[in-house]
Amino acid sequence: ERMQEMCRLDDLTIYPTTEEDYRTYLTGAGFSFLSIDSENEVSAEYYYELDKHLKNPKTISILREMLTEEEIATEIRSNWLVYESLIENELLIRKIVCKKE
Image (cartoon, rainbow, N blue to C red; front, side):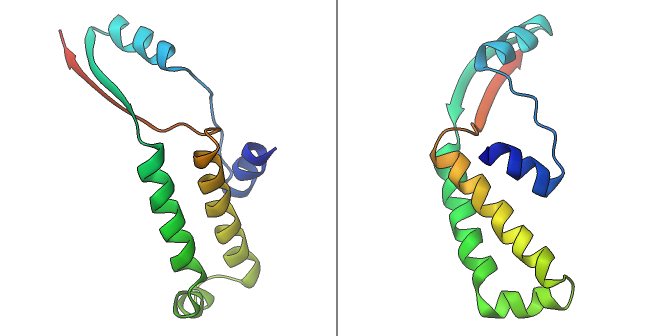
């Protein structure tokens, strides 16, 4: 439900895939894997800090010059959904390092 709301708010289409799918795609394209690492913790910290920034009265004042109150609320909500999805491991961010064979 959270992911659906996030996609709706940001007009996103997400195609779920697995680490094994990535391995298959990339090895099929001639790459070998060096590492696959989770970036969820770093990304969650980023979105948490972004949430604090977006809710800052000075930031909101600047945003009001460009966006409606509804758009500001949507951006804040969307950002928080990404944060929650990351800490709940519903959204997985991976750094994949490989080399061309």
